[in-house]
Image (cartoon, rainbow, N blue to C red; front, top):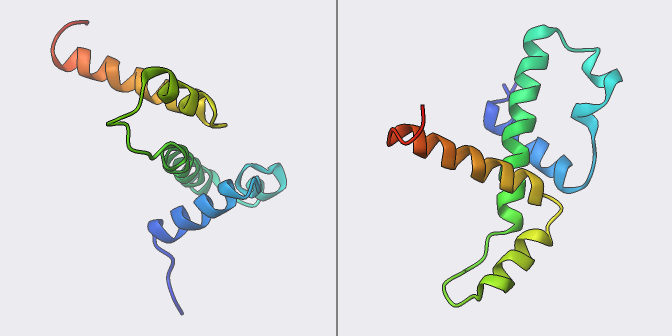
Length: 101
């Protein structure tokens, strides 16, 4: 019998998210999981959402005007997640350089 890896679950979850299938978020599915499995599912969903979001805006920006760039970012249904992740990354960088406490 094949054992599923984290990457297998991640790939499956990404496919479901891209097809707007909320299986992993559905209460009847989550009730079938214990606490540890729910925590694992949370991790997988969070990572998969990030991967799908960033793939939705994977484009070359070298020759792109600022307005076109932001229009493309705002045009994805994942713009809130992308902006939140960018803000978190900037805060981590600021902490690393001791710009904030």
